[in-house]
Image (cartoon, rainbow, N blue to C red; front, side, top):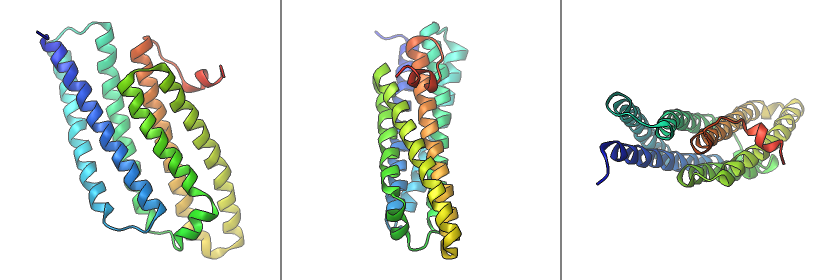
Length: 222
């Protein structure tokens, strides 16, 4: 029969999986709105945000109970510490998804802008990294962690190339100033989503290997 600590850790693990799945859905909804004309998805996003907040509180409660009532060994302690950190990162990803939807409203002739600056490729990379981040937590596989870092590097490169192109176009076309400014802000939010995914991957690496590592250190070995 499983001990009370084992049951609590299983509950914590399952709750983390739930919140990461919600975040994945939220990011996909935000990317769908970004790449198309907004319809009713806003209500879905707000509902998901509420669920994420509730699960975030539940995770904190489980962790506090384990700390207060159990005596976790080192490996379990690492998992609990990482769970709290991952929950916080997920909440921030949710916040950025909401911000992207709000900024999306102020982009006129959006389809032309999306196509001109190849925003679709960046949005698909964001979808890819959030999926890979969830796999990373569920499998606790160092290879999956590394792939999160690689995808994020690609996202950063794409965004660093795209923002100057948008700014350059804004200087030539005054009608693009408002839309371009909002699009640049969206790209910065997407960059932060990628960063939060790598933070989660680093937390998983800590659980697996009992040491901290920055993603730059892994990529430098390539």
